[in-house]
Image (cartoon, rainbow, N blue to C red; front, side, top):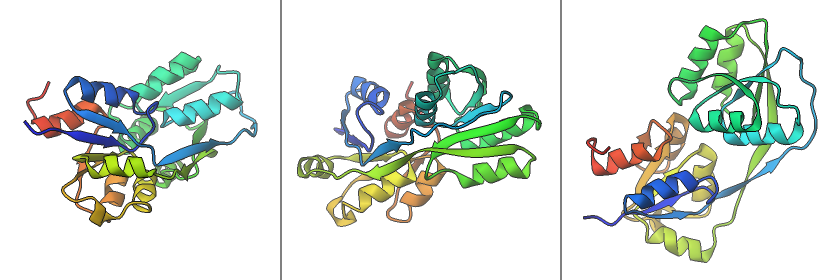
Length: 231
């Protein structure tokens, strides 16, 4: 059986669930973050009838650090965001049926009233098509920039681990850019490259052949490498 050595381009904290599930299936897993996050601490005003749109746990974290009062309605992209929002005391109205921005946009358009103020806490690099889709459908939306990704230097020891790996998984377009700004493709022979989501896939395929995972879940990766019969 092939021995898999998988690189997750995220911190050990962010990759905790992935790491556990993949290791339980006998894979070697290494978390090598290629970026860190700097959070904005400036306070902001919110209307009472605002609904918060959370598309990431970092958005929830950044929002909660500034606003101590969590008595806000929110909608969330996926299970991880739902868990984190509920844990911190937000009132979750609904989550997307499928963890993709297009599905989430469709559900918001179909279910939220237009008289509510929508607040979208996000990164400096965010999904502008998602923003435009909401505004084009009559929503009063404010984008709230709460954090930004900053490139983290990959160490010599980490580069050795990367060189000996079999698979590298990217979770965002900025991870792709920060990774390949430090490591040349020639250094990465006989590797399988994986992208989480459409935008990450589009960025990664500009650089190399890769495969797309439609769901941001480790089980989806296991199905791909072990076959669709994986349970």
